[in-house]
Image (cartoon, rainbow, N blue to C red; front, side):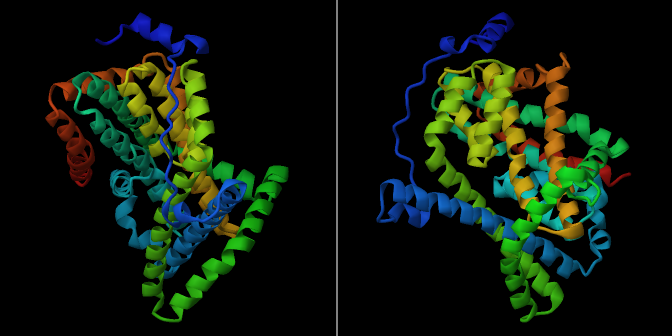
Length: 419
């Protein structure tokens, strides 16, 4: 039985000692790949695992740099001309949605876009792709909700919790996509931010960011340069550039999954503590806990998927899960910001601009939707309606996924081609 609005508000603002008690999950967390077979234990193992995370971050930044160099080599400086099809914002939005659905990681999509912008992809073409990445990442939590399909009430709660992420991101796109198309708000703000942090006249902040970027590139450039020199020595520039892009994308896919898996192992106790203590204290606390956990595990899909089973069990309401997923959207922007430090000079400013687009888009979305009274409940209303439909018949779930990720993109592209 669903809760009425007054009950939801009571739960949302309840003090932490009134929040539902959660039993500790004692299921051992499996280390990824070969690290699960390391013949070491205790502190030594922990140190080795942390070093593996640091090395994976190095590979991530190097891979993004390789993509930027490869894109420049493959396009021969004609990126704007070659990717003129992506100048249609609707096409860019669909590319972002589908790319994230395929990789199941918005961090992967945004990191790749950062590298492409550094390599010459126009920012105007990149902004809709970054918006679409937010929508595409919602599929993961929806798939997780299917694990509760055996019980109608549990599935209704799980699918509702997963769908609130869909509805929120769709509402964000509905607000900011036309605004960006008409006024270029994100373009302007992000360009200013990149100038303030990476420009030559940005003062102390720019000096610090530029120094940090130079230090990072001093470490990562040798690896990226080695890959570039090796491939350019074996094949023509265009093919070498394409090979670099493929290698960079493969590297990003692998290391982001590895980083997420390792951080879940290393921070599992802290993640659970933050989740259990903060999620019942109100919307501000929920947003910050979602942000913090996502930064800790470097995966918004992991964060939102963590919330779905707890919603299914009835331990948390949709009003408590909702701000948590909003925070996850903001937290996932950290990966692109890290990736932007893999460049120097004008490429660094371009990369930071792309990363800042994703950051400000999610910040502005949270501010607008949560500060405008009539907008805040809309994702919950839509998710509740969809959850009730899904509980009645699982075909509604299939129809929703097909409609959101197949039919809607096709219709959008078809309509946009008429103008």
